[in-house]
Length: 170
Length: 264
Image (cartoon, rainbow over the protein chains, first blue to last red):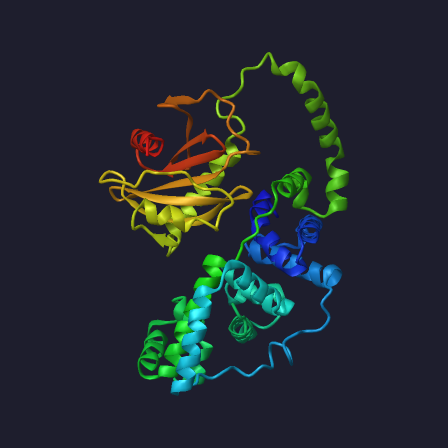
C-alpha cells in the first residue's frame, strides 16, 4: 500500500526534477507524472520496502522515457569508464590542489549550480541522490545498476564536478 | 590499503560509513600520504559546498496542493483498480450520500474534540519516534540557538522563528531537517532530564488542524492530546505550525511551550 506519506517526498523529488529538466514547468509536470504513476502502480509497491527510493526510481524512469533531451553524455566514455584520478603528491600538485580548495571555498551558489548542470544527467542524478541521503543500495535501485557500481559512479561524478569548478574562472 | 583503495572508499570514510578497522586503515594512510590527504580535504570542501551552497528547490505549494487533492483514499491504493472499482461502488454511493447530507446534520452535532487532527498527531509521533530511534538523530549538534537556527538557512523555504536557546530544564541538544506530512520541517531536539522532547516547526497552511477547543497557553491557542503513550501539543503562530512531542509530563511540555513562545 502507498499512503499519503508519499507526499512528504515532493520537495526532494521536485529538486531532482528541477535539476534534470532545468526548468520549473517541466519539473512540476515530471513530479506530477511521478505521483500519477505511483498511484497507478501502487499495487506493485511492497509494503515495508523503501518508498522514497521507489518514488525516485519512478521519477527517473519517467524522465528518461519522456523528458530526456540530452542524448549525448558530456563525460567522455561515460561514468563507468573514466579512470579515477590519482593524487599528485609533488609540490606542483599540492599548489594546484591548494588553488582548487580556494576556488571551492569561494564558489558561490550559482557557480556550483552551473557546474552541476554542466554534468551529464547520470552524474547529476547520483550526486543529488547522495545529497538527498540515499545510500548505495537505494541509489542502485533508483538508477537501475548494481550496488557496486554506485560508489564508482558517484566518485567519478564528483571528480567531474570538481573539474568543472576547477576550470571556472571567477 | 594503497592510494587507489583509499580513494574508492574516501566518501564512505568521510561519512562515517566504514567499519572501525577499515576506518583506521584509511586514517593511517591519510596520515602518511600527502596526496591522498589533499584529496581528502578537496572532497570535504566539495561536500561542504554542495551541502551548504547548492540551491535546493522546494516543490511549489500549488503543486503540493494539486498532488494532495489528487491523492486517492488509501483503500483505493491497496488493490488492483478493476477489483476495487466493482467492490466499492456501493460503498462509494453511500459515502457520497453521507457527504451530501452532512451539511444538513452538521449544525446539530457538536464538533468532536480534536477532530481532523489525527493525521497531524500521528505524523508528529512518527517523526518523534524516527528522531529518537535514529542512531544519529541530529544533523547539527547544539552550540546554542544562534548556531542551530542559522544552520537551517537554505535548507528550508521558511525561517524557523524559535529563540529559546534551552536552559537547565530543557537543554537544546541540536536540530535536523525532517518532513511533516507533505512539507519540510525544522526539528529541534531538547532534553528533559533523561527524556527527549521533539519540536517540529513547519508551514501551517493547508494542514488538517484540530477543530476542537484549544487550550490557552500565554498568547497561544494550543491543542493538547496523547497518542501511543506520547503527549502531543500543536499550535499555530502566524504562518508557522508547531508540534511538540514527548513522553514527559504534559505540564512539563506546557512549560516548554511557554519558553518557546516567549520574548527573544
